Length: 197
Image (cartoon, rainbow, N blue to C red; front, side):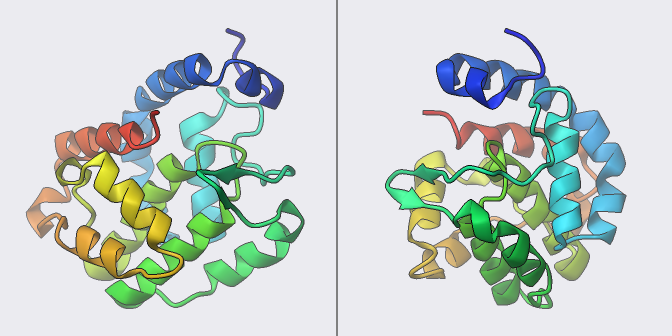
């Protein structure tokens, strides 16, 4: 497999390519951890999400950190039309994030936008964690959430965010756990597993 991966290469052998991309990306946990204070400082912005995506997938995807120019769907759900992404991403960035409900609403809107060709969920869960840490001094303990319950809650979240809110609220880290790099790394690995088919 040639690195960085192009959109064409990704489409031609998705499962094999993504397994290798995930493996290589997860090796960057130290880089993400070292940059974490910076991500928290700009949490909730499009700039933050773009930077997270670029750090996770830079040199692995040709399109790391860039807005997709194709329309995508997953499980019968069509994400925001690529023609509207340039306009909608600043609007989502400007959404309030002062309390848990605001943060979840913002996370759901960014998920509907799905601004990248691939790697949205992986990057957006880190983006969500950066917002939660900045505003509420917590993060999600992804180790406590199973793939099926998370994916089910996310699929229904555009219509009813309650299931996602309850799921995430019941899985928050305590303040002293925020500085534990092992918890961070293990949570990231679990979070990646949500995307596997």
